[in-house]
Amino acid sequence: DADVTQTPRNRITKTGKRIMLECSQTKGHDRMYWYRQDPGLGLRLIYYSFDVKDINKGEISDGYSVSRQAQAKFSLSLESAIPNQTALYFCATSDPTPGRVADTQYFGPGTRLTVL
Amino acid sequence: AQSVTQLDSQVPVFEEAPVELRCNYSSSVSVYLFWYVQYPNQGLQLLLKYLSGSTLVKSINGFEAEFNKSQTSFHLRKPSVHISDTAEYFCAVSDRRGATNKLIFGTGTLLAVQP
Image (cartoon, rainbow over all chains, first blue to last red; front, top):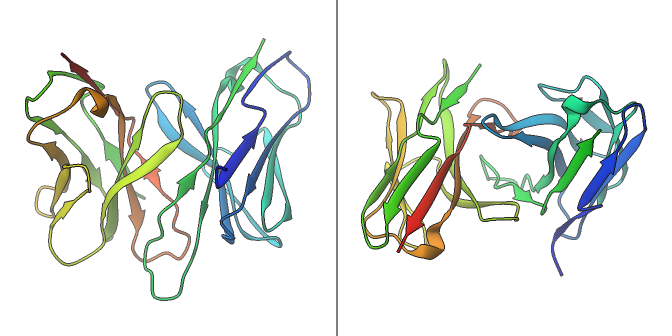
């Protein structure tokens, strides 16, 4: 089974609808991240969380919110979806093991979201 | 703030030919450097990273990258590519000072290996 899973894998919705993307991990990592990928723009950080009570905005958080329900679960919500939120969304995790100065991030398979 | 530039959006190459994917970064502080690979319809996977020590780092599948501080570059090379190397490659940096491990990604380079 995959260590980082995302549901749904594909979603088509309409402008104004509320959408939730879910991420679960079995790696036991404390840190979780949400990115969006747009053609020609690479990946940009939306939100990140270091534990259940520590959630931080990334560079493009407007129009998004998150919830860290447990160490293993980190959900991304679009309160009122708009067409320019059409993108590929990735969840990632990392593990701040003592002594490691830069932790590898492990990515889920992505959710392709289309907002009509 | 950091930024990453990958000037080549697409690099076509024939199988068994050498390839270089370019990455330049801008930062006022020291950084860690990463290359991630994204195979079709998959998430990103770490290919290799430079944290400290030897400026030449290697992956298990024949790729290597060299950190050049004076040129602020971290180019990725492979002497002989395979069809299976077809993927999108992302260069990324992370601030050495911070504890957040936030990654700043480049825009990606699609490596298209042709038979």
